[in-house]
Length: 322
Image (cartoon, rainbow, N blue to C red):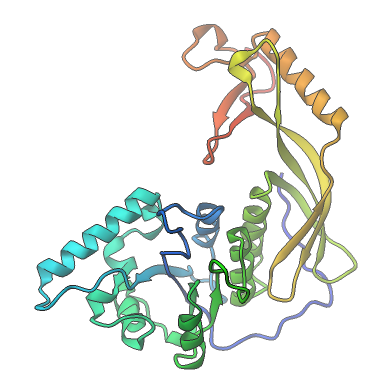
Protein backbone atom coordinates (compact mmCIF):
# COMPACT_ATOMS: atom_id res chain seq x y z
CA UNK A 1 0.00 0.00 0.00
CA UNK A 2 1.35 3.43 -0.90
CA UNK A 3 1.51 5.89 1.95
CA UNK A 4 0.73 9.56 1.92
CA UNK A 5 3.74 11.84 2.05
CA UNK A 6 4.39 13.50 5.38
CA UNK A 7 5.99 16.88 4.81
CA UNK A 8 9.42 17.38 6.45
CA UNK A 9 9.61 20.01 9.17
CA UNK A 10 11.56 23.11 8.24
CA UNK A 11 11.10 23.01 4.46
CA UNK A 12 8.68 25.85 3.89
CA UNK A 13 8.36 27.56 0.55
CA UNK A 14 7.14 31.11 0.12
CA UNK A 15 4.10 31.21 -2.12
CA UNK A 16 5.18 32.34 -5.56
CA UNK A 17 3.15 34.66 -7.73
CA UNK A 18 1.86 34.35 -10.30
CA UNK A 19 0.55 30.82 -10.24
CA UNK A 20 1.40 28.25 -12.91
CA UNK A 21 -1.80 27.19 -14.63
CA UNK A 22 -0.51 25.86 -17.97
CA UNK A 23 2.47 23.84 -19.22
CA UNK A 24 3.41 24.37 -22.87
CA UNK A 25 5.58 21.69 -24.47
CA UNK A 26 7.74 21.83 -27.57
CA UNK A 27 7.75 18.56 -29.53
CA UNK A 28 10.76 18.11 -31.81
CA UNK A 29 14.03 17.42 -29.94
CA UNK A 30 12.19 18.00 -26.67
CA UNK A 31 9.60 15.23 -26.39
CA UNK A 32 10.89 13.31 -29.41
CA UNK A 33 14.28 12.86 -31.06
CA UNK A 34 15.26 13.53 -34.68
CA UNK A 35 13.79 10.16 -35.71
CA UNK A 36 10.38 10.91 -34.16
CA UNK A 37 10.99 8.57 -31.23
CA UNK A 38 9.92 9.73 -27.76
CA UNK A 39 12.83 10.22 -25.41
CA UNK A 40 13.10 7.76 -22.52
CA UNK A 41 10.48 8.28 -19.79
CA UNK A 42 8.49 10.89 -21.75
CA UNK A 43 5.27 8.87 -21.63
CA UNK A 44 5.56 8.26 -17.88
CA UNK A 45 6.30 11.94 -17.31
CA UNK A 46 3.30 13.11 -19.34
CA UNK A 47 1.07 10.62 -17.53
CA UNK A 48 2.13 12.00 -14.15
CA UNK A 49 1.81 15.64 -15.22
CA UNK A 50 -1.70 14.97 -16.55
CA UNK A 51 -2.80 14.28 -12.96
CA UNK A 52 -1.37 17.50 -11.52
CA UNK A 53 -3.36 20.24 -9.82
CA UNK A 54 -2.46 23.92 -9.62
CA UNK A 55 -1.83 25.68 -6.31
CA UNK A 56 -5.53 26.59 -6.44
CA UNK A 57 -6.48 22.92 -6.66
CA UNK A 58 -7.64 23.11 -10.28
CA UNK A 59 -6.41 20.75 -13.02
CA UNK A 60 -3.10 21.80 -14.53
CA UNK A 61 -3.58 22.36 -18.26
CA UNK A 62 -1.02 21.36 -20.88
CA UNK A 63 -0.61 21.81 -24.61
CA UNK A 64 1.80 21.49 -27.53
CA UNK A 65 3.05 24.32 -29.68
CA UNK A 66 5.39 23.95 -32.61
CA UNK A 67 6.95 25.89 -35.46
CA UNK A 68 6.71 22.78 -37.71
CA UNK A 69 6.11 24.24 -41.21
CA UNK A 70 4.59 27.54 -42.31
CA UNK A 71 2.03 27.49 -45.10
CA UNK A 72 3.38 29.01 -48.30
CA UNK A 73 1.72 32.18 -49.63
CA UNK A 74 -1.01 32.62 -50.43
CA UNK A 75 -2.02 31.07 -47.11
CA UNK A 76 -5.36 29.28 -47.22
CA UNK A 77 -7.37 27.37 -44.66
CA UNK A 78 -6.83 24.24 -46.74
CA UNK A 79 -3.03 24.60 -46.59
CA UNK A 80 -3.09 25.20 -42.84
CA UNK A 81 -5.36 22.21 -42.31
CA UNK A 82 -3.07 19.99 -44.40
CA UNK A 83 -0.04 20.97 -42.29
CA UNK A 84 -2.00 20.36 -39.10
CA UNK A 85 -2.94 16.88 -40.31
CA UNK A 86 0.71 16.15 -41.15
CA UNK A 87 1.64 17.15 -37.62
CA UNK A 88 -1.06 14.91 -36.17
CA UNK A 89 0.45 12.08 -38.20
CA UNK A 90 3.71 12.58 -36.30
CA UNK A 91 1.83 12.51 -32.99
CA UNK A 92 0.16 9.27 -34.04
CA UNK A 93 3.49 7.79 -35.08
CA UNK A 94 5.09 8.65 -31.74
CA UNK A 95 2.12 7.49 -29.67
CA UNK A 96 1.93 10.88 -27.94
CA UNK A 97 -1.36 12.08 -29.40
CA UNK A 98 -3.29 10.58 -26.48
CA UNK A 99 -1.65 13.08 -24.13
CA UNK A 100 -2.90 16.09 -26.10
CA UNK A 101 -6.50 15.31 -26.91
CA UNK A 102 -8.58 17.09 -28.00
CA UNK A 103 -5.90 18.16 -30.46
CA UNK A 104 -8.03 20.98 -31.89
CA UNK A 105 -7.66 22.74 -28.55
CA UNK A 106 -4.36 21.44 -27.24
CA UNK A 107 -2.10 21.57 -30.31
CA UNK A 108 -1.09 24.89 -31.88
CA UNK A 109 1.20 25.34 -34.89
CA UNK A 110 2.98 28.50 -35.95
CA UNK A 111 1.16 28.43 -39.27
CA UNK A 112 -2.13 28.76 -37.37
CA UNK A 113 -0.89 31.92 -35.64
CA UNK A 114 1.02 33.29 -38.61
CA UNK A 115 4.21 33.73 -36.57
CA UNK A 116 7.10 31.59 -35.33
CA UNK A 117 8.28 30.87 -31.81
CA UNK A 118 9.18 32.68 -29.67
CA UNK A 119 6.73 35.36 -30.84
CA UNK A 120 4.23 36.31 -28.15
CA UNK A 121 1.34 35.87 -30.58
CA UNK A 122 1.96 32.14 -30.90
CA UNK A 123 1.78 31.56 -27.15
CA UNK A 124 -1.33 33.71 -26.88
CA UNK A 125 -2.93 31.80 -29.75
CA UNK A 126 -2.22 28.56 -27.88
CA UNK A 127 -3.97 29.96 -24.80
CA UNK A 128 -7.02 30.96 -26.82
CA UNK A 129 -7.23 27.52 -28.41
CA UNK A 130 -6.84 25.93 -24.99
CA UNK A 131 -9.72 28.10 -23.72
CA UNK A 132 -8.05 28.88 -20.45
CA UNK A 133 -7.79 32.24 -18.74
CA UNK A 134 -4.11 32.70 -17.94
CA UNK A 135 -1.33 35.17 -18.56
CA UNK A 136 1.95 34.11 -20.14
CA UNK A 137 3.55 34.62 -16.73
CA UNK A 138 1.30 31.76 -15.57
CA UNK A 139 2.51 29.41 -18.32
CA UNK A 140 5.56 27.16 -18.02
CA UNK A 141 7.41 26.55 -21.28
CA UNK A 142 9.45 23.37 -21.83
CA UNK A 143 11.85 23.17 -24.79
CA UNK A 144 15.40 22.27 -25.76
CA UNK A 145 15.92 25.52 -27.69
CA UNK A 146 18.22 27.85 -25.74
CA UNK A 147 17.23 30.95 -27.73
CA UNK A 148 13.55 30.27 -27.10
CA UNK A 149 14.21 29.71 -23.41
CA UNK A 150 16.00 33.07 -23.19
CA UNK A 151 13.23 34.89 -25.05
CA UNK A 152 10.50 33.28 -22.96
CA UNK A 153 12.19 34.25 -19.71
CA UNK A 154 13.47 37.71 -20.62
CA UNK A 155 10.93 39.06 -23.14
CA UNK A 156 7.74 37.24 -22.26
CA UNK A 157 8.45 36.79 -18.53
CA UNK A 158 7.44 33.14 -18.75
CA UNK A 159 8.93 30.51 -16.45
CA UNK A 160 10.79 28.01 -18.62
CA UNK A 161 12.88 24.87 -18.22
CA UNK A 162 15.33 23.60 -20.81
CA UNK A 163 15.88 20.03 -21.96
CA UNK A 164 19.46 19.16 -22.81
CA UNK A 165 20.04 19.60 -26.53
CA UNK A 166 22.67 17.47 -28.26
CA UNK A 167 26.12 18.90 -27.55
CA UNK A 168 24.82 21.52 -25.12
CA UNK A 169 26.29 22.02 -21.66
CA UNK A 170 23.53 24.41 -20.51
CA UNK A 171 20.26 22.78 -19.48
CA UNK A 172 17.85 22.30 -16.59
CA UNK A 173 17.29 18.57 -17.10
CA UNK A 174 18.52 15.72 -19.30
CA UNK A 175 16.21 12.97 -18.05
CA UNK A 176 12.44 13.14 -18.47
CA UNK A 177 11.89 11.16 -15.29
CA UNK A 178 12.94 14.35 -13.45
CA UNK A 179 10.43 16.66 -15.12
CA UNK A 180 7.27 15.87 -13.09
CA UNK A 181 9.11 16.60 -9.83
CA UNK A 182 10.54 19.85 -11.20
CA UNK A 183 7.12 20.99 -12.38
CA UNK A 184 5.52 19.97 -9.09
CA UNK A 185 8.16 22.06 -7.31
CA UNK A 186 7.38 25.10 -9.48
CA UNK A 187 3.61 24.76 -9.00
CA UNK A 188 3.56 24.46 -5.22
CA UNK A 189 5.59 22.16 -2.98
CA UNK A 190 2.61 21.84 -0.67
CA UNK A 191 0.61 19.97 -3.33
CA UNK A 192 1.17 16.51 -1.89
CA UNK A 193 -0.67 14.68 -4.67
CA UNK A 194 1.53 16.26 -7.35
CA UNK A 195 4.72 15.30 -5.53
CA UNK A 196 3.49 11.77 -4.95
CA UNK A 197 2.73 11.28 -8.67
CA UNK A 198 6.11 12.79 -9.58
CA UNK A 199 8.00 10.49 -7.22
CA UNK A 200 6.17 7.43 -8.55
CA UNK A 201 7.12 8.40 -12.13
CA UNK A 202 10.75 8.98 -11.13
CA UNK A 203 11.04 5.63 -9.37
CA UNK A 204 9.18 3.79 -12.15
CA UNK A 205 11.98 4.87 -14.50
CA UNK A 206 14.28 2.90 -12.21
CA UNK A 207 11.93 -0.11 -12.25
CA UNK A 208 10.80 0.58 -8.68
CA UNK A 209 7.20 0.62 -7.50
CA UNK A 210 6.81 2.79 -4.42
CA UNK A 211 5.32 1.14 -1.33
CA UNK A 212 5.95 3.71 1.40
CA UNK A 213 7.65 7.06 1.88
CA UNK A 214 8.45 8.85 5.14
CA UNK A 215 10.42 12.03 5.91
CA UNK A 216 13.71 11.90 7.77
CA UNK A 217 14.99 14.50 10.22
CA UNK A 218 16.76 16.23 7.31
CA UNK A 219 14.65 18.54 5.11
CA UNK A 220 14.04 17.21 1.62
CA UNK A 221 15.08 13.66 2.48
CA UNK A 222 12.79 10.64 2.69
CA UNK A 223 13.06 6.96 3.55
CA UNK A 224 11.46 4.77 0.92
CA UNK A 225 10.54 1.16 0.46
CA UNK A 226 9.25 -0.47 -2.66
CA UNK A 227 9.47 -3.31 -5.13
CA UNK A 228 12.15 -3.44 -7.83
CA UNK A 229 11.38 -5.38 -10.99
CA UNK A 230 14.29 -7.68 -11.78
CA UNK A 231 14.69 -10.17 -14.67
CA UNK A 232 15.14 -13.84 -13.79
CA UNK A 233 16.32 -16.75 -15.94
CA UNK A 234 14.61 -20.14 -15.67
CA UNK A 235 16.25 -22.94 -17.68
CA UNK A 236 13.67 -25.41 -18.90
CA UNK A 237 10.82 -22.89 -19.09
CA UNK A 238 11.11 -21.33 -22.54
CA UNK A 239 7.95 -19.27 -22.15
CA UNK A 240 9.23 -17.67 -18.94
CA UNK A 241 12.58 -16.37 -20.11
CA UNK A 242 13.40 -12.77 -19.12
CA UNK A 243 10.36 -12.55 -16.88
CA UNK A 244 10.61 -9.70 -14.37
CA UNK A 245 9.83 -10.39 -10.72
CA UNK A 246 9.32 -7.84 -7.93
CA UNK A 247 11.94 -7.90 -5.16
CA UNK A 248 11.69 -5.72 -1.99
CA UNK A 249 14.12 -2.78 -1.80
CA UNK A 250 14.76 0.12 0.57
CA UNK A 251 16.59 3.39 0.24
CA UNK A 252 16.61 7.16 0.49
CA UNK A 253 15.06 9.83 -1.73
CA UNK A 254 16.49 13.35 -1.87
CA UNK A 255 14.72 16.42 -3.27
CA UNK A 256 17.04 19.12 -4.64
CA UNK A 257 16.69 22.89 -4.71
CA UNK A 258 14.88 22.84 -8.09
CA UNK A 259 12.71 19.86 -7.20
CA UNK A 260 15.02 17.38 -8.94
CA UNK A 261 15.13 13.96 -7.31
CA UNK A 262 18.03 11.72 -6.38
CA UNK A 263 17.76 8.24 -4.91
CA UNK A 264 20.00 5.82 -3.09
CA UNK A 265 18.37 2.43 -3.27
CA UNK A 266 19.93 -0.88 -2.29
CA UNK A 267 20.09 -3.32 -5.19
CA UNK A 268 18.65 -6.80 -4.67
CA UNK A 269 21.32 -9.26 -3.55
CA UNK A 270 22.27 -12.42 -5.43
CA UNK A 271 20.49 -14.39 -2.72
CA UNK A 272 17.28 -12.41 -3.26
CA UNK A 273 17.43 -12.94 -7.02
CA UNK A 274 18.08 -16.66 -6.52
CA UNK A 275 15.13 -16.87 -4.13
CA UNK A 276 12.88 -15.05 -6.62
CA UNK A 277 14.02 -17.36 -9.42
CA UNK A 278 13.28 -20.44 -7.33
CA UNK A 279 9.85 -19.04 -6.45
CA UNK A 280 8.95 -18.53 -10.12
CA UNK A 281 10.25 -21.99 -10.96
CA UNK A 282 8.08 -23.53 -8.25
CA UNK A 283 5.00 -21.68 -9.50
CA UNK A 284 5.66 -22.84 -13.05
CA UNK A 285 6.27 -26.43 -12.01
CA UNK A 286 2.93 -26.51 -10.18
CA UNK A 287 0.97 -24.90 -13.00
CA UNK A 288 0.29 -21.71 -11.04
CA UNK A 289 1.30 -19.29 -13.80
CA UNK A 290 -1.58 -18.73 -16.20
CA UNK A 291 -0.83 -19.28 -19.86
CA UNK A 292 -2.79 -17.04 -22.20
CA UNK A 293 -5.83 -18.90 -23.52
CA UNK A 294 -5.07 -22.08 -21.57
CA UNK A 295 -8.14 -23.47 -19.80
CA UNK A 296 -6.04 -25.75 -17.59
CA UNK A 297 -4.60 -22.69 -15.84
CA UNK A 298 -7.98 -21.27 -14.87
CA UNK A 299 -7.09 -21.61 -11.17
CA UNK A 300 -3.58 -20.17 -11.49
CA UNK A 301 -2.47 -17.70 -8.83
CA UNK A 302 -0.17 -15.68 -11.12
CA UNK A 303 0.00 -14.48 -14.71
CA UNK A 304 2.44 -12.75 -17.05
CA UNK A 305 1.55 -9.15 -17.94
CA UNK A 306 3.38 -6.92 -20.40
CA UNK A 307 4.03 -3.34 -19.25
CA UNK A 308 4.12 -0.18 -21.38
CA UNK A 309 7.82 -0.75 -22.11
CA UNK A 310 7.27 -4.28 -23.40
CA UNK A 311 8.67 -6.03 -20.33
CA UNK A 312 6.99 -9.24 -19.17
CA UNK A 313 6.14 -9.11 -15.48
CA UNK A 314 4.95 -11.81 -13.11
CA UNK A 315 1.89 -10.48 -11.28
CA UNK A 316 -0.39 -12.08 -8.73
CA UNK A 317 -3.99 -12.85 -9.71
CA UNK A 318 -5.15 -14.24 -6.38
CA UNK A 319 -3.73 -15.54 -3.11
CA UNK A 320 -4.79 -19.18 -3.47
CA UNK A 321 -5.79 -21.53 -6.24
CA UNK A 322 -9.49 -22.08 -6.86
